[in-house]
Image 1 (cartoon, rainbow, N blue to C red):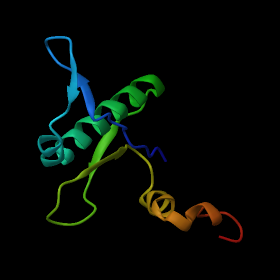
Image 2 (cartoon, helix red, strand yellow):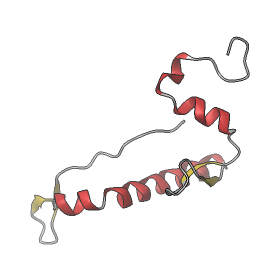
Image 3 (cartoon, rainbow, N blue to C red):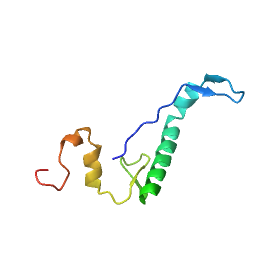
Image 4 (cartoon, helix red, strand yellow):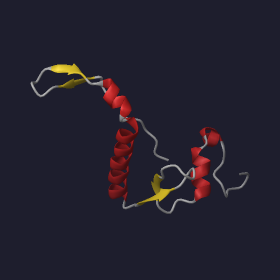
Length: 96
């Protein structure tokens, strides 16, 4: 399961070439949109490189969908989503 976080600097180069601070209030207000765009770009690049596709999945009814790799069984997604999942055996294997 791919899981990462982008790291942003609080400084940026302005149009005049000088360095300055990013407007953190505007960045904070647009965190979900920025995160969604980042995740979509990473998923598109990974899928293109590996010949995969994505599909939307509803995690919580009434909330926005999330994009998952198409064809991955829901049981495996749920297993991998648990933080303690790394200590468990894969579903469907002996002793699981």
